[in-house]
Length: 362
Image (cartoon, rainbow, N blue to C red; front, side, top):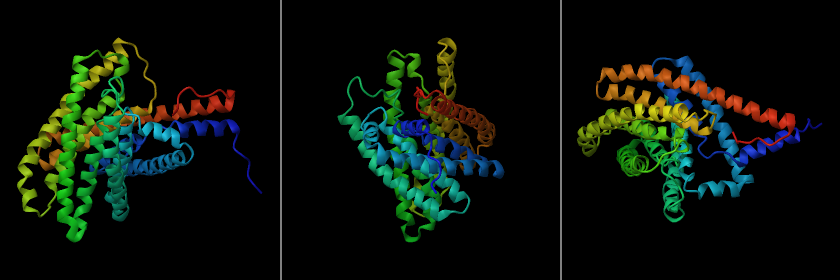
């Protein structure tokens, strides 16, 4: 005997959510995972495990929605992939997979973590050249805006491969030295991309008109990309590669890592000022958007980067900063998760109550 069919209005609502799924929604996994991992290192295992469980569900759910979108709404997916303003958002899948993989590895699931890293690496290779082809051949003078596009998420995805890779490489036997060289190369690629994008961003935001609509949560990825580069550099410093050439590079990595942490720190007051200007001076309402997870993640990443720097460079002050920042990030996560729950509830109530279409996808 078949069970009751879901209400047509609910099916229509769910279909709309899948069709319009924001390609950067895996930032939810990134944000949840990075806070969970930081709490793990800070000696808060119960809270870390709780967030890890939430993250497993969130990742599985988003993968299911993405697969359904590939199967049922290929045109909508292709439109996002070929949109210069959105294509870099797909790198949240790469970063989210690696952040979750780090959580798995911390809990002893090394094979699962290796599978996540392998998947993320293959996807990164596909996206890195495809995204730049889209940016080169499909962008126009009035197309993608570096302020809106979240282009720096490509850097976050690249550096996330370094962090998880460094944890997994020592167990790869004879392939370990070559893989260590490879992840050092990825760290350098991430730094090169950061230099390109931050130059474009600074030119755009400091020398052209900026309106309240230009100030979005994606701006925090500027700080987050510098923070994850710091984290990756600290991991490389503490890794014993056994490769003489890589060992000789450590003084260089030391200096660059400290500079990237300083740069990430410098951006925090400025980004706060941008938010005050938008929501205080211009009275723009603060409403839920999936891009808010791209604000939460940099806060958690800055906390973990500060903690790792304190270990790699023996700077006690950065550990104190990390201990305070992780609770700031957790507070932002709770607020954003509550806003997400409220957004889902309002969407369901609109569809199941009045039947009118929801105005904004979740």
